[in-house]
Length: 224
Image 1 (cartoon, rainbow, N blue to C red):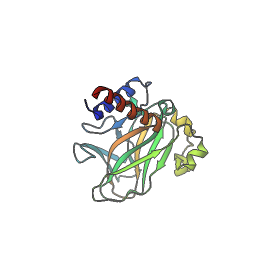
Image 2: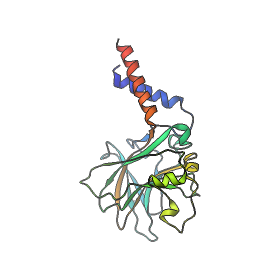
Image 3: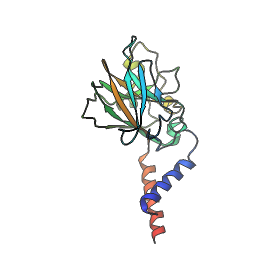
Image 4: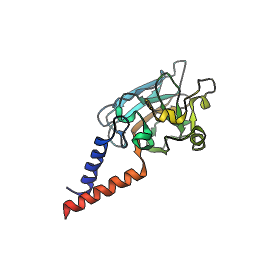
């Protein structure tokens, strides 16, 4: 086996011994299906596309303009690897790849909440314009134990920050200790079609470094 393969084996081993719930390195590649993701609002029409992703398959979400009209998004509340206590799992980042096919996305959000009955926290990646059918990686690093003041200082917002008429969200650390909903969400005006691929959770840098070094060490011993 080569070094690259042994790093992959070590990564799989790390995931296997992690506690149940959220797992660092979890990625929805959409290479064969929607992997538990579904439209997150009544204005979202989601379809699975087997090709054209980054690479291979992806999910495409479109805006239904039948009133009342809301933001659109794709969310997962069933895949264990995305859910649970992010602090305990060592999750310190997340993101997804976005392709804006027609009109500009005024806001590209990453959103977490505990369940469908509560509001949550969002990170706004800002405006993303159509870019010649190019995929744009959107990632954010965070500490899941931040207090609300620190979370806001690092660009995070509550749902009621965005819409003051909505109910208050639980504390940032409270949500991140019991994530039950991960969502890629798009706010825009008018007709909107975007692609979503590679929704992911990222490990803390120290854990990732140890994983890579451990894999290289094993590979060297095997090749010796």
